Image 1 (cartoon, rainbow, N blue to C red):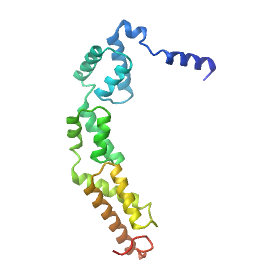
Image 2: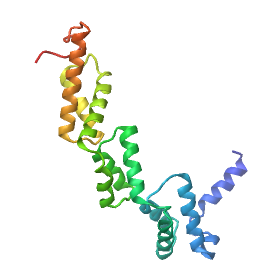
Image 3: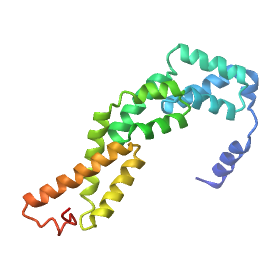
Length: 196
């Protein structure tokens, strides 16, 4: 970026007050902001309301624009929460607690958060937690069992899984690793799986 371009870019960023366009037609300005934001990625109504507030759009104008976008189906917090839940669980392995926390941070109403995370049943969460525990345990060979247990439990808790799911996933992962080691003819002691 040249010095002149940097100066003009900096000058544009310095103007923090409402632009002339926003003062002439505040609703068109708000619509443009919302469309631009939605073009980049899906957003919740709360996130868009916060954007409009930061851009100093009058509250009544913001509400009217957001209501219209909701009517048109361009803002749909329920669909957003459902897609977010599915994506975060399948691709990041997050449990319902972590997903609910992230949705609330994105200003999704509580009733929609509960509805979205309710699709993750206990069995599905258990399967995912067990898979994550097995994958993580494979990177912990040579550590004492107590350390493995503690690290696996902490890892799964940070992913948003409850105590019962975490305990079962950790026990299963350790038992499977011990069984595989015995099957391969390895000494379980060498793999830090002491006899109980």
